[in-house]
Image (cartoon, rainbow, N blue to C red; front, side):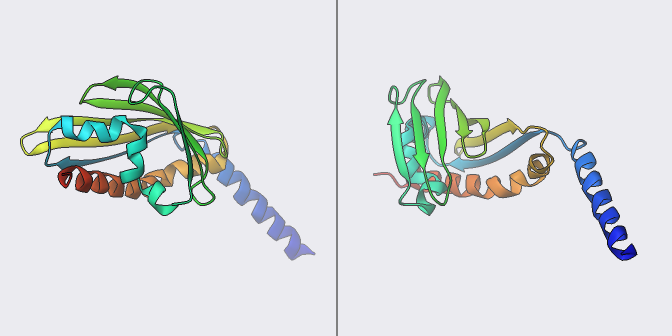
Length: 177
Protein backbone atom coordinates (compact mmCIF):
# COMPACT_ATOMS: atom_id res chain seq x y z
CA UNK A 1 0.00 0.00 0.00
CA UNK A 2 2.88 2.42 0.69
CA UNK A 3 4.14 2.15 -2.90
CA UNK A 4 0.69 2.87 -4.33
CA UNK A 5 0.37 5.94 -2.11
CA UNK A 6 3.78 7.22 -3.25
CA UNK A 7 2.81 6.65 -6.86
CA UNK A 8 -0.43 8.60 -6.42
CA UNK A 9 1.44 11.47 -4.78
CA UNK A 10 3.98 11.55 -7.62
CA UNK A 11 1.21 11.50 -10.24
CA UNK A 12 -0.60 14.29 -8.37
CA UNK A 13 2.56 16.43 -8.21
CA UNK A 14 3.19 15.90 -11.94
CA UNK A 15 -0.37 16.97 -12.77
CA UNK A 16 -0.11 20.07 -10.58
CA UNK A 17 3.24 20.99 -12.18
CA UNK A 18 1.79 20.40 -15.65
CA UNK A 19 -1.14 22.72 -14.94
CA UNK A 20 0.92 25.36 -13.10
CA UNK A 21 3.60 25.45 -15.80
CA UNK A 22 0.98 25.93 -18.52
CA UNK A 23 0.17 29.40 -17.17
CA UNK A 24 3.69 30.54 -18.10
CA UNK A 25 3.16 29.54 -21.74
CA UNK A 26 1.86 32.37 -23.94
CA UNK A 27 -1.78 32.11 -25.03
CA UNK A 28 -1.06 33.80 -28.36
CA UNK A 29 0.42 32.14 -31.40
CA UNK A 30 1.48 33.15 -34.89
CA UNK A 31 2.44 30.99 -37.85
CA UNK A 32 4.03 32.65 -40.89
CA UNK A 33 5.59 31.47 -44.12
CA UNK A 34 6.70 33.31 -47.29
CA UNK A 35 7.58 32.47 -50.85
CA UNK A 36 8.56 34.45 -53.94
CA UNK A 37 6.47 33.82 -57.03
CA UNK A 38 7.75 34.80 -60.48
CA UNK A 39 4.65 36.83 -61.36
CA UNK A 40 3.07 40.19 -60.67
CA UNK A 41 0.83 40.65 -57.60
CA UNK A 42 -2.12 41.06 -60.00
CA UNK A 43 -1.48 37.48 -61.22
CA UNK A 44 -1.37 36.04 -57.68
CA UNK A 45 -4.28 37.97 -56.14
CA UNK A 46 -7.13 36.18 -57.99
CA UNK A 47 -6.05 32.85 -56.48
CA UNK A 48 -6.16 34.29 -52.96
CA UNK A 49 -9.19 36.61 -53.03
CA UNK A 50 -11.50 33.92 -54.42
CA UNK A 51 -11.98 31.28 -51.71
CA UNK A 52 -13.05 28.78 -54.39
CA UNK A 53 -9.53 29.00 -55.83
CA UNK A 54 -8.02 27.82 -52.53
CA UNK A 55 -9.12 24.30 -53.51
CA UNK A 56 -6.43 24.39 -56.21
CA UNK A 57 -3.53 25.13 -53.87
CA UNK A 58 -4.56 24.49 -50.25
CA UNK A 59 -3.18 21.22 -48.91
CA UNK A 60 -6.23 20.42 -46.79
CA UNK A 61 -8.44 20.10 -49.86
CA UNK A 62 -5.94 17.79 -51.53
CA UNK A 63 -5.67 15.55 -48.46
CA UNK A 64 -9.44 15.03 -48.40
CA UNK A 65 -10.97 15.00 -51.88
CA UNK A 66 -14.30 14.04 -50.24
CA UNK A 67 -14.40 17.30 -48.27
CA UNK A 68 -17.84 18.95 -48.53
CA UNK A 69 -17.53 22.65 -49.37
CA UNK A 70 -20.11 25.41 -49.37
CA UNK A 71 -19.61 29.04 -50.40
CA UNK A 72 -21.75 32.05 -49.60
CA UNK A 73 -21.63 35.81 -49.64
CA UNK A 74 -20.29 38.02 -52.39
CA UNK A 75 -17.67 36.48 -54.69
CA UNK A 76 -14.11 37.76 -54.25
CA UNK A 77 -15.23 40.42 -51.76
CA UNK A 78 -15.47 41.17 -48.06
CA UNK A 79 -18.01 38.76 -46.62
CA UNK A 80 -17.24 35.85 -48.95
CA UNK A 81 -17.43 32.70 -46.84
CA UNK A 82 -16.44 29.09 -47.19
CA UNK A 83 -17.53 26.29 -44.90
CA UNK A 84 -16.19 22.76 -45.02
CA UNK A 85 -16.89 19.41 -43.47
CA UNK A 86 -14.23 16.75 -43.51
CA UNK A 87 -13.86 13.44 -41.73
CA UNK A 88 -10.06 13.72 -41.82
CA UNK A 89 -9.35 17.47 -41.82
CA UNK A 90 -12.12 18.60 -39.47
CA UNK A 91 -14.87 21.14 -39.98
CA UNK A 92 -14.32 24.86 -40.37
CA UNK A 93 -15.47 28.24 -41.56
CA UNK A 94 -13.54 31.04 -43.24
CA UNK A 95 -14.65 34.56 -44.09
CA UNK A 96 -12.88 37.39 -45.89
CA UNK A 97 -12.87 40.38 -43.53
CA UNK A 98 -10.70 42.94 -45.30
CA UNK A 99 -9.14 43.44 -48.73
CA UNK A 100 -6.50 45.59 -50.39
CA UNK A 101 -6.66 44.94 -54.12
CA UNK A 102 -3.58 43.04 -55.35
CA UNK A 103 -1.93 43.50 -51.93
CA UNK A 104 -3.68 41.77 -49.06
CA UNK A 105 -6.52 39.44 -48.09
CA UNK A 106 -7.50 39.21 -44.41
CA UNK A 107 -9.73 36.43 -43.16
CA UNK A 108 -11.18 34.94 -40.01
CA UNK A 109 -11.20 31.21 -39.34
CA UNK A 110 -13.37 29.24 -36.97
CA UNK A 111 -13.16 25.55 -36.06
CA UNK A 112 -16.40 24.53 -34.33
CA UNK A 113 -15.05 21.14 -33.18
CA UNK A 114 -12.51 22.97 -31.01
CA UNK A 115 -14.46 26.20 -30.47
CA UNK A 116 -11.31 27.92 -31.66
CA UNK A 117 -10.77 30.74 -34.11
CA UNK A 118 -7.95 32.74 -35.61
CA UNK A 119 -7.29 35.51 -38.07
CA UNK A 120 -5.09 35.29 -41.10
CA UNK A 121 -3.52 37.38 -43.80
CA UNK A 122 -2.11 36.64 -47.21
CA UNK A 123 0.02 39.58 -48.33
CA UNK A 124 1.44 40.12 -51.80
CA UNK A 125 4.34 42.52 -52.26
CA UNK A 126 6.09 43.29 -55.53
CA UNK A 127 9.81 42.53 -55.35
CA UNK A 128 12.54 42.58 -57.99
CA UNK A 129 12.04 38.93 -58.94
CA UNK A 130 8.24 38.76 -58.75
CA UNK A 131 5.87 38.80 -55.80
CA UNK A 132 6.67 37.94 -52.23
CA UNK A 133 3.64 36.18 -50.77
CA UNK A 134 3.45 36.00 -46.98
CA UNK A 135 0.81 33.84 -45.31
CA UNK A 136 0.25 34.45 -41.60
CA UNK A 137 -2.27 33.07 -39.13
CA UNK A 138 -2.61 34.34 -35.56
CA UNK A 139 -4.79 33.42 -32.66
CA UNK A 140 -5.15 32.91 -28.97
CA UNK A 141 -6.13 29.88 -26.90
CA UNK A 142 -8.05 29.78 -23.64
CA UNK A 143 -6.61 28.87 -20.23
CA UNK A 144 -7.02 25.13 -20.72
CA UNK A 145 -3.54 23.71 -19.96
CA UNK A 146 -3.68 21.30 -22.90
CA UNK A 147 -4.45 24.17 -25.30
CA UNK A 148 -1.60 26.21 -23.84
CA UNK A 149 0.85 23.38 -24.56
CA UNK A 150 -0.67 23.09 -28.04
CA UNK A 151 0.63 26.64 -28.72
CA UNK A 152 4.20 25.36 -28.30
CA UNK A 153 3.76 23.00 -31.26
CA UNK A 154 1.38 24.90 -33.52
CA UNK A 155 4.10 26.27 -35.81
CA UNK A 156 5.42 22.75 -36.38
CA UNK A 157 1.88 21.48 -37.03
CA UNK A 158 0.60 24.21 -39.36
CA UNK A 159 3.80 25.66 -40.82
CA UNK A 160 4.50 22.74 -43.18
CA UNK A 161 0.94 23.02 -44.56
CA UNK A 162 1.52 26.72 -45.24
CA UNK A 163 4.82 25.93 -46.97
CA UNK A 164 3.24 23.27 -49.19
CA UNK A 165 0.24 25.50 -49.93
CA UNK A 166 2.51 28.36 -50.98
CA UNK A 167 4.54 25.98 -53.16
CA UNK A 168 1.29 24.83 -54.79
CA UNK A 169 0.22 28.45 -55.32
CA UNK A 170 3.60 29.24 -56.88
CA UNK A 171 3.32 26.30 -59.26
CA UNK A 172 -0.21 27.24 -60.34
CA UNK A 173 0.53 30.93 -60.86
CA UNK A 174 3.84 30.41 -62.66
CA UNK A 175 2.40 27.71 -64.94
CA UNK A 176 -0.97 29.24 -65.78
CA UNK A 177 -1.63 29.43 -69.46
